[in-house]
Length: 199
Image (tube, rainbow, N blue to C red; front, side):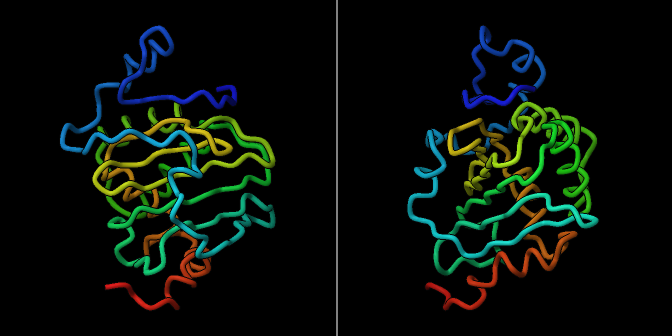
């Protein structure tokens, strides 16, 4: 899929703009999520957040991306799904969007059981949302409690997946105690762990 900054609205895809996407995924999101309008930029979506931690992912000696956790003071990593926060990945290598989606699904399966229906739906949605990336591209995911996950490419809205279960497991790739990268998790949340909890 070519890299583009034009937003994809997966809950309401305009048929003239993305007919195939509408046919495959537009009707799959639960009706219980809260419908809210996504902010057009990552800056707007995270306007009251600050960077709590940074970490670099290396796999077999290759540098993959730099990750930054954006959240409010008092962020509780043990209950991360209850907070609005952002996870920004600054890519250091080129990757196909489909490969990012498939790797994300593998990591999510390591955190919790996923039904075949969820796997089919989520993989299709991620494949549509995640573009091919080049070195220097940034994908920012924003977790919105009660709504789901929103994604931004180089700061501009790419689309959303309005499914709380997906959002919890997706961001669990970095924040769950079951993550495959515990050292990265520890680095990302270190400032939050040191900060006093807000009442």
